[in-house]
Length: 478
Image (cartoon, rainbow, N blue to C red; front, side, top):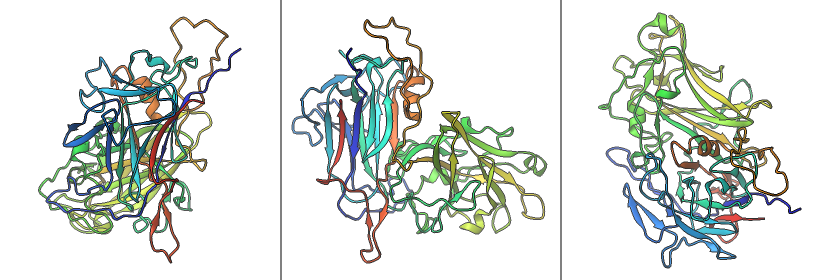
């Protein structure tokens, strides 16, 4: 009996050489940060194209800097097709590179943290059925996805293949999410006295970014890092949804600890508050909930900026902050933290471990304080970011959702196991559940591999290094 092949493996490796990252100052903070490395690869395309002022380079063009390196030269390019109107008709969703054996991409990059974003359009490609895409994703020794599949069935596919539609590698400011000034004593860990401190080997995966009380902010309107900020409406789960103050005329004053590239201006000029009615405010907590994988630590970043005319001095608005019903801040006073019109953020961590569940809810709640401790019994939030933190075994992949029964007749051959593969990240679950509706998946890996500080004698930052100073994306059939 022939042994069943494991899924293909897709790896990304990052190494860098030391170089400063430029910052620009503009009238607003669109493109406030200019990444040293800004790579966007349109996999399977023989041409380059511009989408929202960004150049996507085809990997199939003659003498392309990003052509894959292959042992067997067996990868192919194909046009992607989707019946979903939500799939953008633009790079990188028009073509794909596919293979049943190893292929690799190599990127030369500079020093500093990077995010890696992978784009997938689950589709039937010529001679590559959608249901047969089945592979894992790794980066710099980290497991990011296990058993990625456009359609998850109870059986392993007989002819598994790996594919990718687009790859982005973009520099990030070194202190954006590893801020040793703001978080000098570690990050408050919900329910614990001892703070959470980042290990030198921690990597992050972006789970959710919300422009609280505001509208969707596209990657082109970000501060230069192509982040997407969703409106928060569908994530508000409290009995009352609060009110939505806006102040687009206020002059935002960024500082050294919170530079102007931290979040787009619209995040800090819109908000969600509880409102003016103290009686109502004291009767509930303004709450947001996001579904996440269990058995990980999470970094939760809350963005604040006081811009309402009635809030001017400390104690005008003081409130409580809860993460998963655990009090993490009992005296949140934004004016005291930063001043009026000055953006600020606070980081918290939470451990979500549950042996009985694959997925759970991560909640953020704000609670008003009673008379006597504040002028206004109210609370405010401007933005929310949630990141999964890699486990000590350098894993970011969550468990598989329950397998979808295979409705097709089983292929001839020995019986297949009905047990699904053991692990699948949130992004894979989106591909399976929403594949027929959204039609595409973006895996956003804010991959700060690895944040490591040298000794004081060197006085510099060192990131994880692999031989030959390159970034590689590899699919490997074992």
